[in-house]
Length: 336
Image 1: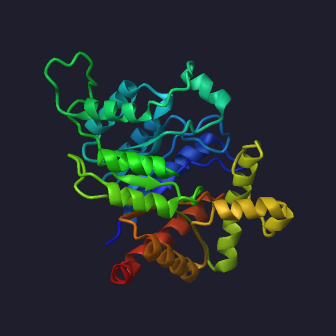
Image 2: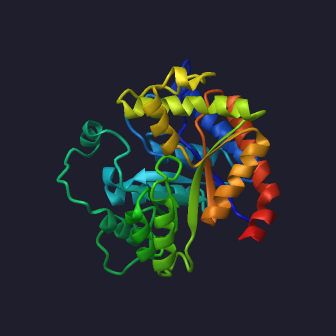
Image 3: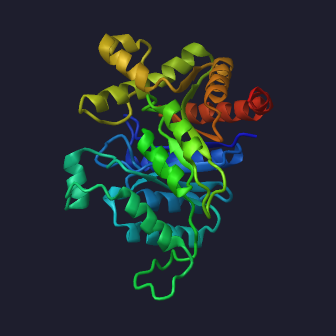
């Protein structure tokens, strides 16, 4: 069976507040647990009115405390924004409170604009020390080293599983070199998907955390009553993506029946390409598209996301995706 997981950005829809978004996130996580989702990940973004998951580790603790069995983690923590020791303490605490349920996915991008990145970091010397920071984190989560002068408490000995997230071959190479699982951001940056997956699998080196490569494919899902309804639900994310590209981020827009009336042809084409790793439509159309993506890229795990304005429709979409994964798994495995 191919495990299926969920990435939630805790979207703030137009007409609602961050408090509503956070309540919806916990409700979604509880449903995801009941529907058999393997993981529930939250992503770090800053200075974005449509995303409420900025304090990611705090929200992970809230979701883990409100669920019972599902793994909860970050998809991801933008490590350059933080001192590795602080993240080790945060996630060491989470792993101590919720043993065996916490994941730490790590990204290299700031997760915001550069002005906000400066406000987060205070000092930006331009050096790319992401690989060194990942290794430092691994050391903080390892068993105690005699003579170590700096330790993460809690954190030491928790062996929190690390993931590398990426949208290029850089993250694939790093994950393979360190022997870590790799999640590709194909839900918004699909261009290098096939190349990154091939490099990761071919160059993977076993580690204490992972004996064989584990590749996760991210897919947008907008499953509606029928094809027209699924396409309608997707228009909120299409508008939000266009707003972000034009420097006007805001709350998640309400869906529209004619996206062409809201986005010019060039923007439509750009958004369509960026969101090409998407399954949108009625249940049978979504089933067919998911089968195509899984057969083509052969992931070890899939992670679904999808920003939908109406919370009830979002729940229904992810429930349909879970039903499809449970029913299609034997056929997908046979095709592989």
